[in-house]
Image 1: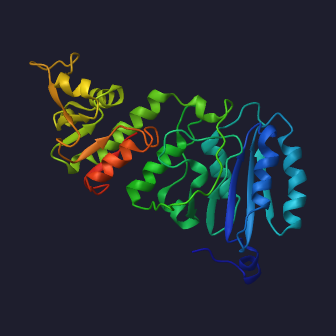
Image 2 (image 1 turned 180 degrees about the vertical axis):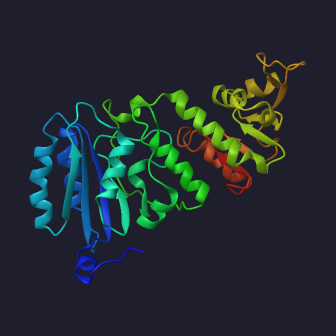
Image 3 (image 1 turned 30 degrees about the vertical axis):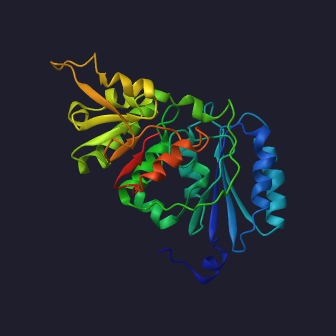
Length: 301
């Protein structure tokens, strides 16, 4: 628990908005305006860490500092001007370290997220919980620091979902997302699936007999693959084929996994179908089975 003199506690913000910045000039005005327009009625501060920006980001931040503090939002600014940026994880950790709020709200200016079930700017947690989970990975470019922290949250059991839209999310070619290889994200996700979910299931079905489902099957360890009793799908052509043969397997005979209609398959399911891409057909099919998420199925994609 934070302790200090009464006047220090009175000055301490309830919520710290954590903002890492690296060459964010084109987006900063809109980003900082969103802080000014928040309808939160408690005390709030903005903690900005400038990670070696070479553009006019700092000038924009200083301009907005006057506006924000005039509206009662304290602005704390840190950073460095080294030749190269230290990366997203480092910048977020530094912004958190220099902030004081009891709760942390993450706001990205240019840095974006790739991989987690929920994108980084939707996260909100207490400072005490963040300290319990641990800091962001500071490996720098190519490291999915948000995904790794998300998994640490799940390991500690501390994630809850709010079922309403709370932000607009910008995806653009300059985002740090593009420094993280898709294969890196995939490997982390498969290993976490094997660590956290599959040990609890004696067998399971992969929902999707197409490219993504087969890729997941091939990515599993041999022990986990042996738990796969079937693929399921709605595509009649895949179902008529009857099975998927893993030709690259070193096992003899090579594994042949049945392909069933989803209504003929048995849970639990690892679902490799992306949501909101079938006009609601997949979601309707899943609901029709009256399954419980976490017990009877997990979303992998």
